[in-house]
Length: 584
Image (cartoon, rainbow, N blue to C red; front, side, top):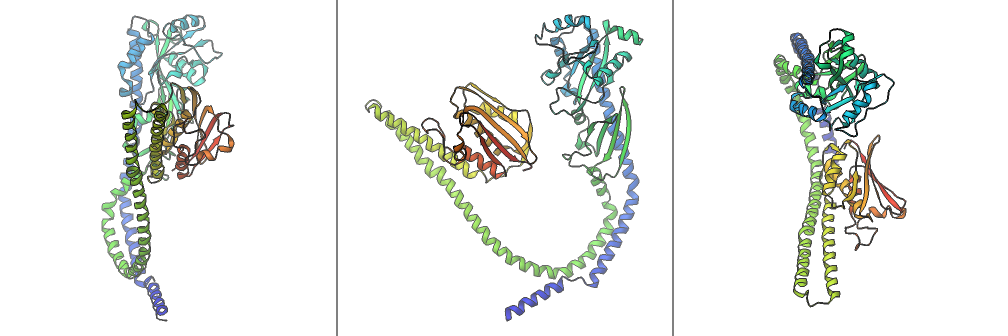
């Protein structure tokens, strides 16, 4: 009866302490009145300053883009001047030397390259191609079209990142072709409308920039003369995203930008989820049309969270006095609520006591696991190393007197010791898989595979192919999975040459990575068994390994909420599919 009475009394105390009294309501109402008054005052003072600041930011953004485009135009005109000044015919080595002297990656950030496009008439085509093939035997013009003239990309530097553009004929597509003719006819620098560069694997919006040059360095005055004397254009390809990153670093501006050309979007970070400062409800927006080398770019500019946060910070001095009054009044509310908080704290202490008991149990389990790691790494590995050393001493001391069969036994003992050491190491790796957590980062499949290719002990006849794709995954565990898959494909192959193909497919919730080889297949009846610990499908004397490769892969992938599948007919070739959960 006493316990029940005390429990009821404690409940009543908690209920009474948690009730709102008249004084609480008075404090809340007064706090709201003062807060609204302070907010109204600060808002009226800051509105004009905020709008003026946004206008300055907007003008700065547009001016920076215009200045950068003028810088690129000057670079192209300098290329024209170089062509006019050289007395010999421009060749690919000569143009490469000139382009390298510009150091465009440092001097002109955002530009994708600089090159020459010649105007070739139908009767000049054979002669033109023969000249180009003197230095580049595989040079060809592409794609086919029905126009009566050709505007092929003859030279482009750096050629490594623009290889697919070499020989591309501007006459095959209307945006490229119409703009190059306008540049020819006006004698001025001209931009194309939005296009996709053939060398851009991500197929993002871009454009080309042309400056014309005429035969013998002439400066024709009329359209007819320009069409008659045109020799070609110096041009630069641009990927709009790279251009903007080179021109306007996000960390240096407080506005987000959307740029369109005739309704086609060139650049848009308004809805880019990767921009942490993006503001879904911007304080200010503005539309500006800017004429740039024959095109009209529509700038849609809005303030971002950095602008909003700075604006809020500027208001702090105005709301300081009001905030102090609010804090003092809230202090009274806190005093009334503190009694209930103390009672709640007592209850929390009881819960914490139970949690502490569970925590101690978990700590003991962790210590046991650490002790196991120590035993496996020290108490087991040390005597095993001693056994290997003793075998070596026996071999050295008795090699000349023991029979051949005993020598074979010593070899077998050494081999089994090495296998046991590998098994211990793999067991340690297996037990530690889920103890560390890794943040997801951008990983390029091709670059990772190339790095692993250099590390793996594989015959020279093996070829590993992977796509040039970036995915977001935890790098270290993902690399362990790919390394083990590649190692298994090489280790269990029955030939000295082979091909391993890593492919990628994007699912709704998963990254789907496939590793396919052309080695011996795995019979369907053994697909599940192959992913169990200590399982190998070949005799251990034929294949070195602990039998933990696929089991380790399965444990890592399952830890990250994914799955592993084996596809094989058991005769030739095996495909391992990894379903890796996104956003981990």
